[in-house]
Image 1 (cartoon, rainbow, N blue to C red):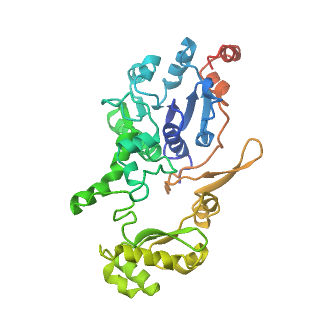
Image 2: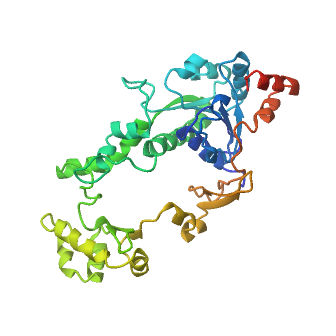
Image 3: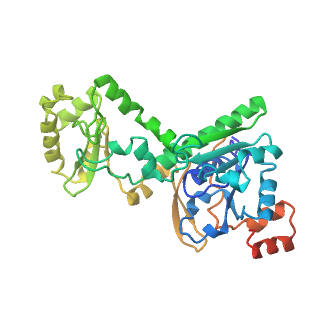
Length: 382
């Protein structure tokens, strides 16, 4: 087993902010890459510094709008393997830190841009956030109560599934290609593009069944009793996913409703069955149903909240929830590394640092003297 991680020796300079890019570089850092996160100090107090994503990284402040700041940037990327940026299209060109500028001094660089709508197309310059990207991709139309208004999910689907994950895949593909060709390349990641693929199954069902996909009214969204959520006696919820006949049969027999077995996907009886199941599940608490059904092969789960997952024994055993002591002695909780590699496992080596914590250290490594660094700090270069 190699403890340094699969990406040991890879250097990443991350210019991105907020969620998609920093999450991507955290994944790379978790697997051994050296990541230097770069942000302008003007963003330090805007309340949007997502510090949890800076584990395993070093963080520095840098003003790219200064001559000295640009000089420092190009020294940083001179020996880098990857650059990540999340500005709106055209910004890096105006700053002079775009792909063409970087590859002049580093032809093997892999340069990844993450944006809402991509670097091309009529919407490329439009501003947006997660809710806008899932709206434009048709995802939000399928979320919410039947016949009601769209409901914004409590998680960032486009940011992470559309942006982060596709950027990480793109970077790994480009690194693999460089091993064979020796050439770097540019990666254009659109969060809208990335999230569009989540409609693969709804699109298939729509075309194969000729049935319009609507919020809370599809095969995998509340249309049938077998794939649904139900309130329990204590106001909590449980979920069922008994799609296959064998799971449905077992569930119906356990609930003393054998007459429903042949009516699994019956269009005339589906509302009646759902209402009956609602009555049944309201008769006991969530904990009682968990004790009764958890070990049965019917595809059952309780709907857990944030506090519960932090102490969940399964997630703890899988090292997907971990605790660490922050800078002020406060115990904090974070999430682990989901990709479990047997020979080159990822690891959490350092806790998230403060904004710009490693600025002096990183700039000193580039050959600048202490007096120069202090002068840069005083003049707002760093």
